[in-house]
Amino acid sequence: MGTPHKHRDVIIAWANGEKVEAQIADGTWIGVMAEQPFFCESTTYRIKPKRVKKEGWVNVYPGNFLCY
Image (cartoon, rainbow, N blue to C red; front, side, top):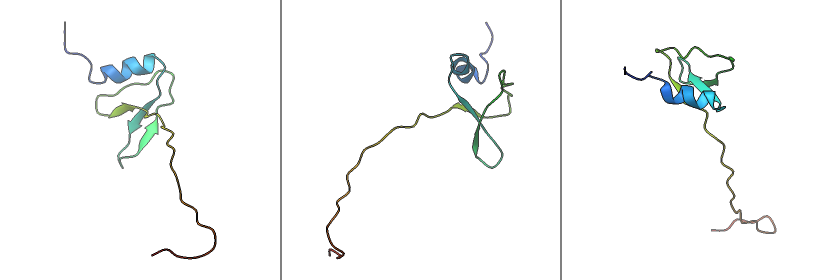
């Protein structure tokens, strides 16, 4: 058995329906839109991070005054 492909994990994730992104020269990540991407050895790929919904609290004070 030979050495696994450099992008093996990303290819498997793509085949399982995950969205994949490629990094371009300026460091920006762009979505891979092709039905059959090439997965070039010289390109960096990743599984698109999922958005996590976060909840937080904000204190709202009546009136227009500053607290020191």
